[in-house]
Amino acid sequence: MSNPEIAAKNPFAVDVEKGKDYWWCACGRSKTQPFCDGSHKGSEFSPRKYTAEESKTVYFCGCKHSGKAPLCDGTHKSL
Image (cartoon, rainbow, N blue to C red):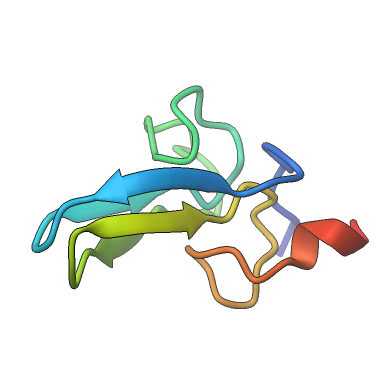
């Protein structure tokens, strides 16, 4: 399995709405980071669904290497 492209070495703060689904880009190629735009087609990567449990600000992983994907766990600090 190949590694995803690093889209950013920082998380993306997003205000999410309770009950809404968000599709996080796992490949790092999307032009609409941190969300999927279909750029993964033809690769082994697939977007990951995130359903907001409450309306709040969440931090989506930008480096695509988080152990808690789609959310940031600080992994970008060591890349």
